Image 1 (cartoon, rainbow, N blue to C red):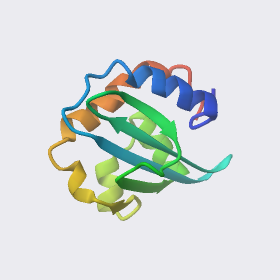
Image 2 (cartoon, rainbow, N blue to C red; image 1 turned 135 degrees about the horizontal axis):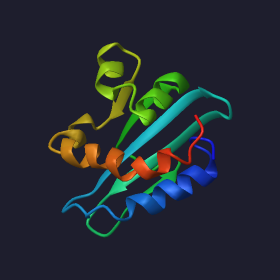
Image 3 (cartoon, helix red, strand yellow; image 1 turned 180 degrees about the vertical axis):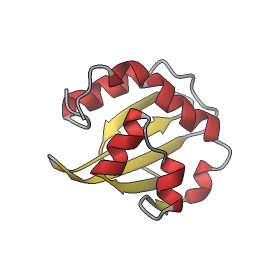
Length: 122
């Protein structure tokens, strides 16, 4: 399945439900531009009641925007969100303070999507 397709988002949502819930709510949106299907976006929700992924960014408190090349490199583990941010290729908008203190949980997202990578075409 293609990265960021509707099917990929459904499978990613299922994979993230196994993450432990947070004591607070964190909703991080991602907007990927320049991909084969145009702009695609999704929000990862980490909260006390549920953890998962949904299409769109309307519920995100903070949003990260990057291009297809950087997004696929980060998703495959050959690139770094931190490096893309420092190089000005990843833009962050909204309440950036929401990210503070949640580095471990954000890194755990990547771990929970590991098995999905084998079934994903980039």
